[in-house]
Length: 173
Image (tube, rainbow, N blue to C red; front, side, top):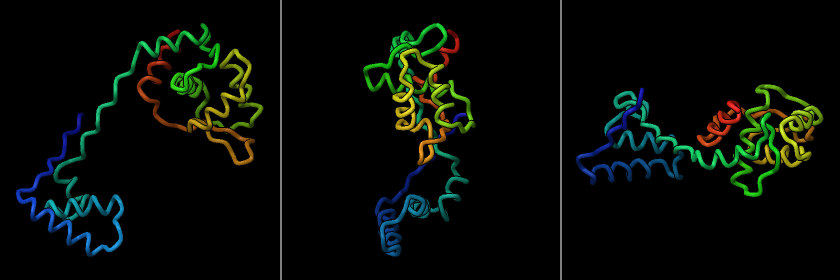
């Protein structure tokens, strides 16, 4: 169900400005995000932000940008018929997208040692450099590792639209 935008209007901008000034002056140091939401909600006539949301609903999420399917197809050609990355892309933007495809092929919820992780990465590429893939996955925030670099784990998150398109394209073959 699509969410609708929360109407936020005030009939008197001067009263809004006075209310904001008075509330900020009482707080002293710069307020945090949640306190700013409460200040704005009170200035609009609600008790707090929760009361404001209950009255008007949650704000509408911005639409996700569409995937660049031409870019996805171009990168998909760097994977072989088994879905293995045949070469490490030269462009950082292509590398980032390729990492999502590797991330999707890693099992969720498993914490594994570095040798096991390297074995999994070796099964996902053909150019023989699991170290660059391992470091890049960690740097991109797709995989976490312990401080001693002994254990690795996939970080669960939602891939961006282009990564979703590439993952789907590789699964279809």
